[in-house]
Image 1 (tube, rainbow, N blue to C red):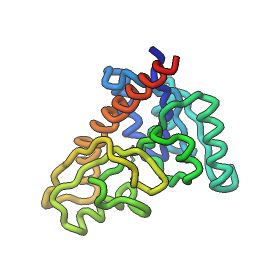
Image 2: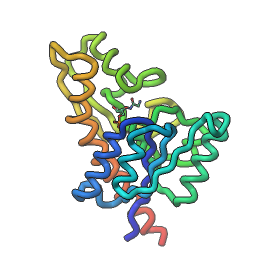
Image 3: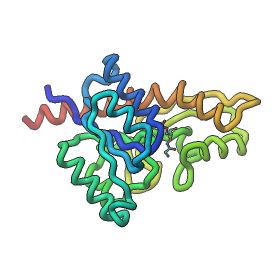
Image 4: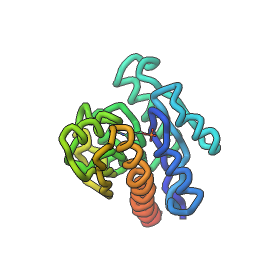
Length: 206
Ligand code: GAR
């Protein structure tokens, strides 16, 4: 059976990309293969991780393209060129337009570092999410993997995992715990769930 062709979109360190690469190696991710890593940041360490794993890595920036519309057109062209079935947003810090997400309905998933619907939507990304969680005083937080639609962090939830908040947590210590115990676990699992579904659909169309 043809595996689901995956593109991982990144902007920074790429630890979630690394979790996906490791999951592919260990067999947790077996119905999909990472064929492309797309970054909107030329100095993202995620690009190095991709190259080290022998995965094609491409950088497309909004600045080089001259605006959101041409940036998205360039990304869509690259995704089509690589015949991508599933897009995984793994620390991708740019909100995609309705036009873009409509082209890949139920084919884009995102990992978010909180238990959605808490601490999510526009303005909640990276460390800011954990700062807000600590400020509010929540005792439990976690991570969510969800489908991406036109509402930021608003698509249907696929997997969630809870993580305790400890009394002396800082945003950084909480971010580390959420990544290690939740994000790096549920992102590969969700990628496998959706990949196996797509693989079956591709097979039934043959
Ligand atoms: C991760 O914590 C991810 O959940 C978060 O950015 C970090 C990226 O780290 N994403 C968002 O906040 C999206 N709203 P990474 O580059 O090491 O995977």
